[in-house]
Length: 146
Image 1: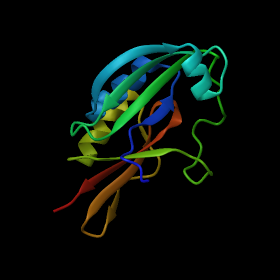
Image 2 (image 1 turned 180 degrees about the horizontal axis):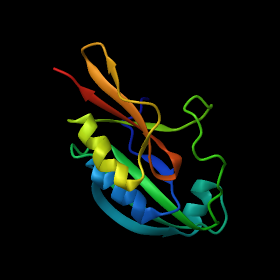
Image 3 (image 1 turned 45 degrees about the vertical axis):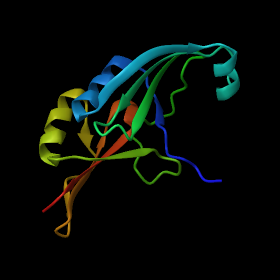
Image 4 (image 1 turned 30 degrees about the vertical axis):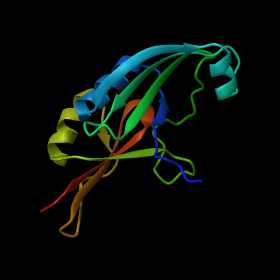
């Protein structure tokens, strides 16, 4: 039996509104918000007393989604440093194809985005970069050239 598709990627955040604003500015669409708690949430996560607020954002084509979650209880655990380099085992990176990479970076800067390095050109195929987004999550951006 094979998987059907990747449904979503989950990201735990401290400031849900700021995270939603960041990804909406990137071009994602807010699908909805909800409160999650109770025995099913506890069992699924392996935590006791789960109460979190989630926001689901999706790409314009409808094929990819991020579930942004703010834990009210148990409290989210912060791992330091938040601005870890990309080569740490288990580091999360989400990559998006964009129409105009430089414009996208400029629009995300007021939402806290910081380039990890710079904008790189891969042959005559792509412009690529990594920015640090909400809660230190690394967001890859790729613009196809030609």
